[in-house]
Image (cartoon, rainbow, N blue to C red; front, side, top):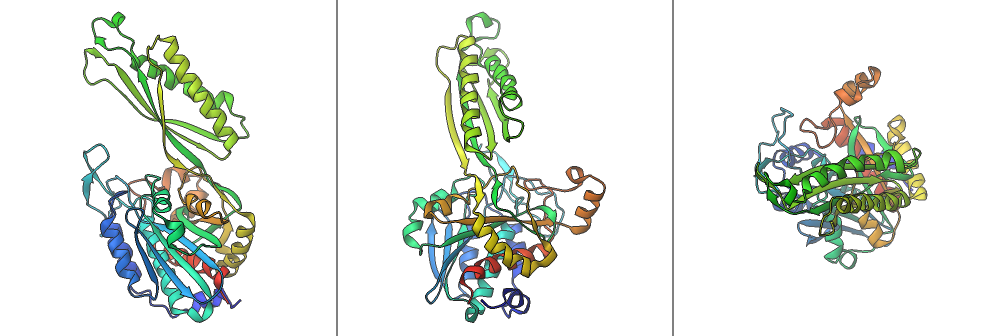
Length: 417
């Protein structure tokens, strides 16, 4: 195999467009399932490369297939949707967009999770591999996925025939910008991003006038007791050596001051690294909810709806060791060990559908002086904006360089000659 580190240092690919493209995406974000403009911009960029386009797929998904003779096939995925958050970064290219959110109310829209960086980086990797076809042989699949934030995009692409519309990969690869020293590429084998589910719980009571609570079965009271009891599941039923999160995201009940409502709704967010722990916690959640409803005399059983599922990102050990060796050569001291994170991703649905190994890693994006000072003063939680915050903004230079080179290097690890 040729020297990937030297190729990425001395490559002749034109990346002069990359910053303007990134800033354009950042200034014009689109919510999950509404990424029509972003998809069109990706397609326009891909016109400059010698590749086969598969689009639309899974809504606004785009896949570019680069054929270059016989050899292995490597797939790299980037996501490109944004979040319903009003941006407060203060940069000249900050988003000022307002759109209707899931509840119908107007909301700000922001690339608060770095998907604009992911997309610009993968397009940069496309430029490098397209320019330097002499350095590789096989097939490179660049997959641009919508609707990651709603945890529906990967499965939508699979349901829309992804497995039959692109060559079968030998490996799947991907990355995510995260808080950390900008430009550091963080990898590990095993669990990297947590599995997650959201659970919508509907509690059915009996409505009555607020002056006659004895005629009601108060679902607000039941919901409140459920919230209290849920806090004991992780604290008293999960081994302290294991990991679990059960958070109550919303509690909705009633619409006026003098009516006991007929129903209440809780939405939980739950995260795990282990399926056995997950099964035990879900059984406990159902037990607690059912018992509280029975204790209050509810005449209808509660309802449970699971949604926004994210599979555990559990990196294949052999793939990790193979790619990590390349990263160590390309990034030197900035190729570091990752820590597992409690956030979740739907990337894993793609390699699982193909039945192939995968590696998904993090790239630090916090300005280095901010990170170093926060670590030295033990103020990371206070001073470092994290994904999904209105002030989250990757440091462009080191982050785009690292993410672009990491994408290209990981693919070249498999198709390089």
